[in-house]
Image (cartoon, rainbow, N blue to C red; front, side):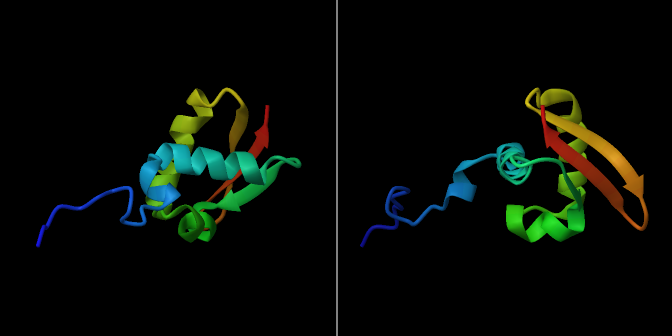
Length: 87
């Protein structure tokens, strides 16, 4: 018996192969494709397999780094609401 794992046959999902930032960016691009979107991190956390805190930190980073997305910290009512649209 071998304890060696073969990544190509272990059922590695697409989300395992992408970085956290890449997963979030891909999700935002898909959702903002038809226009702007508004969201709170806690409501999309399960869909991107990240914690709300991780999403918040990445959104600040994406607001400067993602040239194809316009990211705006839109409002704060019990949690930050983010506004995203494609550039």
